[in-house]
Length: 580
Image 1: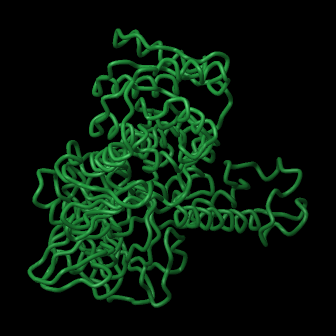
Image 2: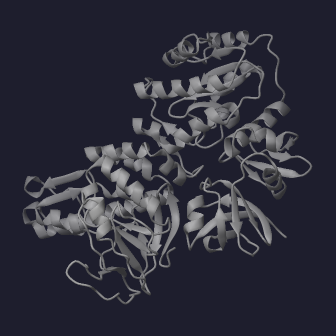
Image 3: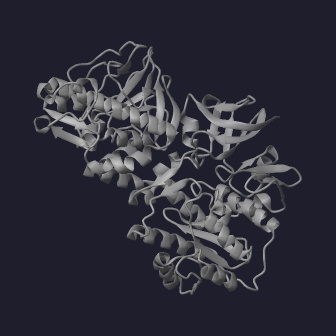
């Protein structure tokens, strides 16, 4: 529990925070002069320092280098004292634990940075061991090239020591690496230190530039975090150094760590511009939920169609033509990279209507493998009487792979292009004699499919077995005896009413619950008032709020672990509340 650090915004593990000093510091940031060191315990014992509201005090410590054996670290471990003021405890990736400090200084950070696997495993271990609302400080490692990845990993505080030393060595740092000052024909920067001819630019100027470049990259990182776009930036930026690319790929293998911090929806577009995009947690989560939670409730044949640039797909010209040919006689599922497959009921659900991808007309081997695996898992879970593949030739390397794997035959209807007259006529003809499903069936199945995706397998039947729908798709309102939920078209999710929340609690679907103290929340629930919370809660999840005096429903603004561990900040945006 921290007293002087508060998290305001999150973008996965990355976050915008505030170190509460006399002059507040917005993180991720350089500590600069806002830090004071109480000293090492190696040469002598030290008295506990007095707290200083103007600075973050590094508590007395015994720092050990990277590679120190565990038994040595344990033998020389220090229990930092509590002080009245902002404090930081020195830890290593092997000794990290909670000390009640506002920040934690990773003493072996220089042994981790530069090595993809060691860095990722070390950071994940540390973040799991220290409180979620404490700041993490990596000293002596930040450069303009790596600081965005460090922030993505969840690091909050840095110093300019490495950048300055590099400058005194005549190494000019940029976001794409380092360059020898003697080899520069001109200065590729417009910072104050670079406002001179390269011939006059000395090592002192180089150190000043390096610090400016580092500060500029932190400003970029903060702005990207605020916009939820740090990952987009990183997918291009990390390619300038091999270990950064390796670290990003290693992080993608830490699915449980990333998924716990990733919101269930974002307001911004997800740009899929590289092979790394396939491994983004939002993509993997969507594919996992579609293939393990979603279940088609239509008895009609399946029609596989290509995606469209327009989102949601049903608003595109091509999908309008498909609809005219299908005429509610089949269940439509779109195939796309990087999402995999998108059933028509989930076309609005994040990230299905929030992504943009690079279209070249050719599939990469990684895209073929990913989409084929998702389609195979989808068809293994959902049985159809017929599968009609209304897709162009370049999709057939995927569909034929799935046919061979599942030992089934698809019917192909495209000639040259899916929207040609002959292709659309073939599609309509293939469905001749099939029965249409009604608007009521479509809307009810959409509500239940979203509930499956959002709340868990079979939740659609548990929560919405006997319902009626009002309004116009995609702004559907769900009613039973009372108004139960409303579909939020921007994110393709369901927002529950109090009646819907009571039905959720009474159902077999797992309920995400926040237990609060004896008060009635109005507008929001702050972290200090939370007694307990479901660990499965993610940012953006629907949650039930319960306490001795209130029952409420709302949307989580942080994940479950942070709700319990944090001592500051908003945890739930309350929509409806009733007093007990």
